[in-house]
Image (cartoon, rainbow, N blue to C red):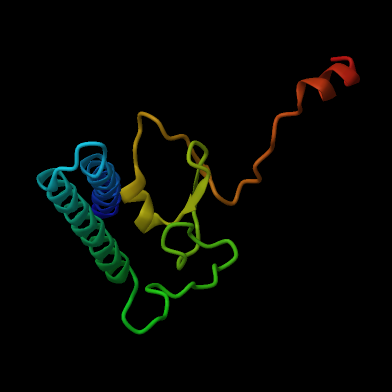
Length: 140
């Protein structure tokens, strides 16, 4: 969210800078008026201030999203073959067909949703249905 706010501030600042330049040029036209030029200078400076503030907010947001020491926040652990897809530690016992993940007994309790999930044993081989083209070629 702060990134969107920063982008909005920079956009409004750019419009302010543009309008400030237009107002300054209008004040130097056929009938020069110093108050209009000063108003354009104020719009230009306000637009510059908003743009700089937007860049500051965006830099603070980016700085906060990266860890201090330059390494990744969570080291990538190697997945155990046949292990749980959620905790990557225990042996998987159950396979959720809807979400297509293997789970251990501990993670099943957190994932359990009887309305939308369909569970099968993880050790059972998953058989795919043949495509319609293969069925048509077989003559069935």
